[in-house]
Length: 114
Length: 111
Image (cartoon, rainbow over all chains, first blue to last red; front, side, top):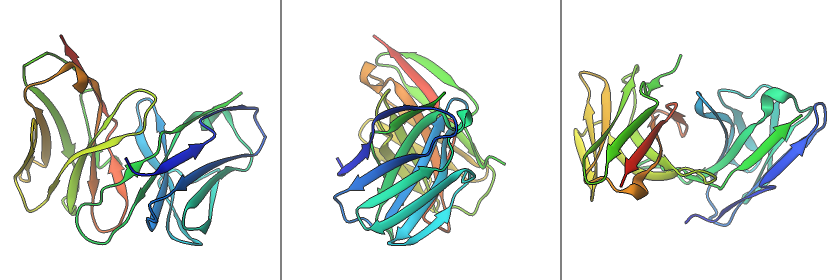
């Protein structure tokens, strides 16, 4: 298994509070991704990073920001959490170029916004 | 505009029989199609992929077929085992390092 950890694994917070989720990898992969999984929607890309300090938006980036100051860490921040951001969040990594774009996923963080 | 569609939310099969999971896509400019499997409370895991220049790729009990004229992708699992019970996502990749996933299909293999 790829060395990917996510913290926290579970979090309950209140509407309007800031929340930061952390993804840590030990694979030295260049690319890192944040997804959310919701019933009826599958996996949707929030933001991704293609290198230290290099990030870009995904399909559902509104209300989220990211930072990557080190190769191994990719942080997802909800500046002011809303109930619509209740979801399961997955981090993924890969190391292109060439070949199948196989992404390896972390175990997920279940976030509940009350 | 969902570019990868899994139109059936669930499938139930008997152990030992074939499971066929389907996926349709709406844009032909893709390099690869991939299948991921997800168990509850775990992250998705890569299962098998196929290049857009191929029609078939096989790995043990898992075979993926690509019908480019019909813009259709299918995953065959033979024989199905109870441990295959999971949610399966198809995904496409093309032109960038991003994947677009379908909504997923829950497969239940009954003993």
